Amino acid sequence: MARCRGGGRFLARRWLGVGALLLGASACKVERDAAGSERLVTQVAMVRPAADRAVAANAVVAGASAPEPPQPDETDVRSQEAAAYCHQVEVQALETNDGLPKRLDRDTMSTRVMAYGCDIILEYAMLDLAVSDVAVNGVHAMRGEVREKLCADRGALGVMAHGGSFTSVYRDERRALIDQFTIAAEDCSEPGSAQGTPTL
Image (cartoon, rainbow, N blue to C red; front, side, top):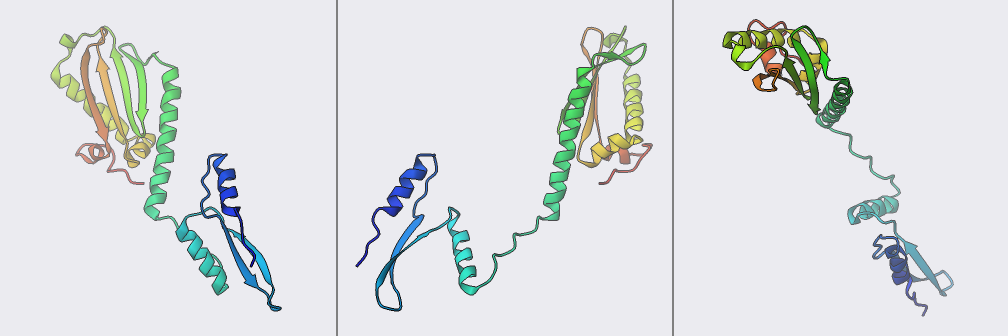
């Protein structure tokens, strides 16, 4: 009776040499042909999960084709699209930051832009201004003005529709914090905002 000698061990050693573990990849058996003589049959299975091997084997036996891969969930697709969109926001923030600092007007300089996904941080320096010079009602008015501009801007609304936000940080000429606030989609649905809540 013929025997299969060392086939599995040889393949295992060979694949281990390149960092892959191939256990049970070689199977040997003896079959008898129609004339009754013995012949050696060696089968090598592909390296894949056991569950996949069983499905593929059953499909071959039944004469059927391999099962169709599952279609991606709509939520997964939207999540992937949002991730790609927010990655582009990060890239644009880096590119913008390379051109800073930049004077915006007589009193304001843009000093830094950062993005973590679709969450954007904008830092400004208020020139010729100290924290002690800033009135509380002036800070509230500034927040309202920024909110109005962001809620009316299509680009900003697109960022917020992907779950993003805009944090504005204002410092005086000595870098002391004057105020900071965040505008997100829900702020655009507040009374007095220029736009309703953005949607994808």
